[in-house]
Picture 1 (cartoon, protein in one colour):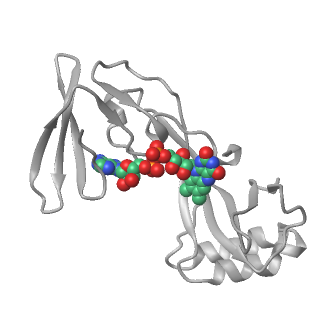
Picture 2: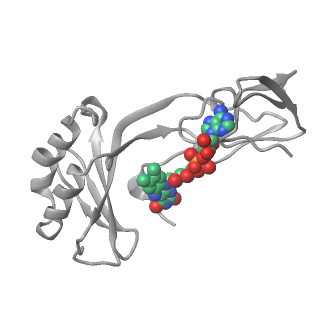
Length: 185
Ligand SMILES: Cc1cc2nc3c(=O)[nH]c(=O)nc-3n(C[C@H](O)[C@H](O)[C@H](O)COP(=O)(O)OP(=O)(O)OC[C@H]3O[C@@H](n4cnc5c(N)ncnc54)[C@H](O)[C@@H]3O)c2cc1C
């Protein structure tokens, strides 16, 4: 069994006569190598480059989730997710440890300000913070001002429409995703 990831990056699937027989990959020194296997499990996540050969590649990105971690705050109901159905889109808070709360702000794709030049923090401060529950507001402001705390990820809509291909099996975010607001354990 071969496993690919941090040290070995798969560049493409080997397909012969409609059957996947393995992968082409690069190692950390940039050497191009090949691995053959009777079954290839494709699980390269939400930015998958490999899914296009195994299913309908159409992906829509209606919005992005902007995520960051709040500290020193106490949500109103600790055992539940808090969702603010704000305009233009929702904001989610949920506890991830005894001291931390994760916040995810849905930002429509037409308007995703840059994190690096500070425009994202400004957007969150002016457009989102006023709609946040009072008990979370101070922590919300502190969190967006903390350097390197803000992460952005696409919310993708994709049909789970595989082209059944002998020799390959696709799972995880590469295969299908749903809006993270529906997240569960
Ligand atoms: C902030 C946040 C909160 C979340 N909360 C929840 C939640 O509460 N509940 C829930 O169900 N889900 C949640 N998710 C989603 C969940 O994390 C993903 O659905 C899950 O991690 C997908 O797993 P995966 O193995 O398909 O992909 P990933 O975890 O993305 O793993 C893919 C791996 O493949 C590697 N890779 C990529 N390309 C290649 C390549 N060409 N060659 C070799 N390796 C490669 C990557 O380096 C990575 O290690 C959350 C996600 C985020 C970002």
